Each structure stands twice: as C-alpha cells, then as structure tokens.
Length: 159
Image 1 (cartoon, rainbow, N blue to C red):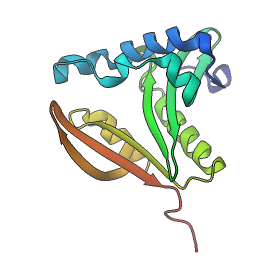
Image 2: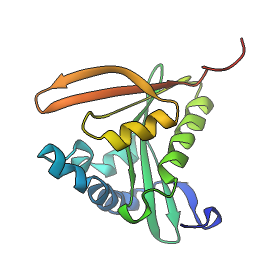
Image 3: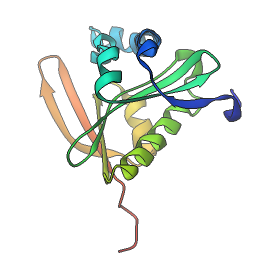
C-alpha cells in the first residue's frame, strides 16, 4: 500500500491525456472480456475531457495512479469516468476520488453526485454503495443494462 503522503491530487493538464488514456484502458481491460466489448471510457477522447470538464488525478511522482473525470451540469455533478491503475486497486484510491467528487460538487453548489456503470460490474456497484450511492434507475441499452447511481449530499444532514 502506498503512503497517502506520497500521493498528490492535481488537475489534469493537456499533456496528461495520454497517461489518462493508458490508465483508463488498463483499468477497464478486465471488464471488456466480461461484457464482450470495450467499456465506453476506453474510447473517450481524454484530451477533450481535460479541455471541457474537470479531470483530476492522483499521482505519485510521475506515475498516474487514478483518475476521475467529472462533468458539471445544471443540477448535479456527473462522474463520467473513475479509474484506478490495476496495481493500485484495493488501496482506497477509488474511495478517495469519490470523496473528492463530493467535495467538488459542494464547492460548486451542487448537492447531488451521479454516476453510471454497467450492471455486470458488481464490484464497482458495491464500492459505490459502500460510499453512500444508491441506484436511481436502470436503463436497458442495446448491449446491456446501465445502472444510474446517485448520492444526495444533503442526506443525513439536520434541517
């Protein structure tokens, strides 16, 4: 496990796009066999995401360990992609990035964080549930079922 003090969270820059693409491909590769195709984030234009949205990474030196790509929308913050390097999975980095997304949402005046995943990605769904996300709806698409999840950041707060 990596000491937390060695990890730096920073906003992605244009020249980080290739590293983000490589990490995303590696993180999602095991899911491709399960669903019989590449998961959508494997084909994202990460340069465009960096330019048009909020993209932050957890770095140790020059090594990208995890990334989160967020879209600020009118009434919520959407996590479009969250990926952790295979060698770092299970070290709490995904949870750290979910917490970062929630802090980001609050700082932008958003009280809801949303994300979506494939219904076959059971371990990811379990992770999101452990972090307070619940299923908002399921959507049947041509090549599977998309599970839309959300977390209301005001739940549990006193009125």
